[in-house]
Every structure is written in C-alpha cells, then in structure tokens.
Length: 403
Image 1 (cartoon, rainbow, N blue to C red):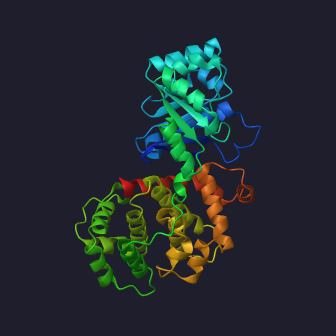
Image 2 (cartoon, helix red, strand yellow; image 1 turned 30 degrees about the vertical axis):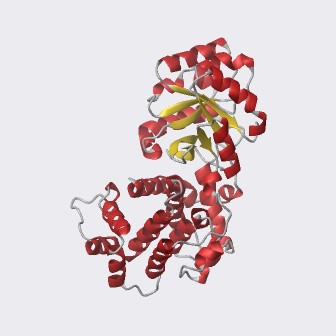
Image 3 (cartoon, rainbow, N blue to C red; image 1 turned 180 degrees about the vertical axis):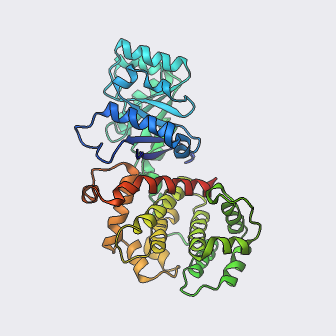
C-alpha cells in the first residue's frame, strides 16, 4: 500500500524545527468529502508507523497528529509511542465526559495533548488543564483579538502556545512578544528583510563554484582544487559520500576518490546543494531541506513526464527555486551572479510553463493539497503511483545530507 504523508514544520522562537504536523491520506482521493476520515487516518497511521517508519519522516522530532472524536474515544493514540506523537484534539470535539476520560488517560500515560484551532470558552477549562499545548489559528483568531485570552491562559496554566498560519515576519515577532513559544506557517520561506542588501564576498565565492560546475565542459582539476580550498564543502562531501544513503562497505577518504565515485552528474547536484546550504547559514535548516526534497522530486518526476529539461536541470531548478528567500534578494539579482543557461533562468523567474506546472505538482503533494487539478489530470498514470515513492526517497536523501 502506498503511504501518503504531507508534513509542515513547527518552529521554535529561534527558528529551529521543533517537530512536524503530519497530514495522512491512504490515497490521493482522500481529500474528497465522501472519505471516512476515521478509517483513512487510522489506516495510514498504522501503515506509517509499522511499514514506513515514522522516525524516517520525523527525524527524531515529534509529530503533531489530528485525531477525530471517534479516534479519541477509541483511544487510538495509545497504539503509538508517546515519544513520537503529540495528540491534536480537533476544534469540533466537545468536552463531554467520555472525551475528558480519554484525554485524562493520555495525560496520565505521558502523552502530550494539543487543542487544535482553539477558540476559548469556559467549558474547555478541564480540557485545557490536561493539555501541554494550545494552537491558535491566526486566520480565525487574529493576534489583536487574543491578548486577554493569552494573558489569562498564561496566568493559570503551564503550557505551550502555538501560533498557526503565521504568514509574515511581523506576525511572528508579535506572537513572540505575546508569549507564543511555537510557530507554524510559511513565513520562514519568505524574505524577512525587504532591503537591498549586498551579497557578501563569501556568497559570491560560492556562486563562482556553482558557475564552474554548471559549465558545459567541466575542468575537474579546477573543481577539485576549489573543493579542497573550501573546508565546509570538503567536509560535507566526504560525510555525504560515506553516509548510509550510498550503502558503501568501504569508506572514501579523498576528495578525488569521492568525485570519481559520485560521477559528474551527482557531483554537480551535491555541490549545488552544499553551496545553497552554506549560503543559508542564518536561515532555518528546514528551508534547505525542503529545497532539496523539492529538487529530488522534480528530478524524478522529470524521468516520467515529457519536458524540455533534463532531469539534472530539473534538480538544479528545484533546488534554486527558493534562493530568493534564502538570500533575501530578488531572483533577478541572484541570477546575475550565476552562470545558468537562459532556459534555467526562465524557469527560476517563473517564465517557463512546463516547470511551473511541475513545481505546483510537487509542492501541492508536499503540502497534501491533493485537490489540485493536476492530480485529476494524472489519475491512473504511472507518475501518480510513483509520487509517494519519490517523496520517501527525497526525504531519505535530505536526511543523509543533513545527518
């Protein structure tokens, strides 16, 4: 059975990944209204834990999982390790005695409970006392309306407040001042400072390395020298080539040997990834992980879809598609420092329809937005069946790089 998992990172105030909210499906059709939510969730939970392995998706961090009223009453969360999950109680669950009894048992056994999309009412006081976390949807309850509620909760309870759907840097800063400790949304993928900052000399040096490996005729000796002269790239190359992803029995100890083993195509991809990672020193790791996952998925999808790009080009475009967010610079400025073909530049600037469609397909799958028309268009085709496999492989590749 294919396993479909969409995840969204949850950040601390220091923009470190705390964990992930996981959205489960047992097929791409689970989005439709006639789907039995309880059956879909429990089925995919089982397959995810026992077949795929949740730790591969979460990387040792907790997963926030929505549980319906029926699943709470059936005490389904007790089937799964408390170290790996945070039980999200959906907003439509009322504090009836049977629900309170289940939540109390979860709490006594050491499970963490979160109230999802919370809107305060005194009837929820008992539920609040059993929870470790409360999530506020800022689209439903804007920060300006929450001051008195937040003050009251913080004065009477020791729990964590999570701001959900944080879309801007301003909202992030405002929520921090109000006492929120965790944050969820897409603000981290957007430039936080809209100023015309200069690209540093170190970043320009990295871009020169990117330009060198993207030449039609590679000078491997020059590339080897550039890698050796960059301690960060050298270290990451040897660490990556000896990771579990390649399943090697013998360690590789030299840059030249690593380059030979990887081959030109894989070497190009590696250098692009490591340079992007180094240039994002002050950005959340999850932004780089997402870029790498997206790049790998674009590459693999390109093997099944007809485009005018090579799979190698699709990897590069997918990887660099978030570079404007990484460097807080317009994409046009960034591309003036990198030797890419016009075809790749057009794709990165959103001018290529084929890549735009592929990018939408990949990002919609990542976010679990499977009501997109693209999924209906590819229904029954090979790529639809391959997407979960591509996603799992991309996560494993990213995990190996950032281990």
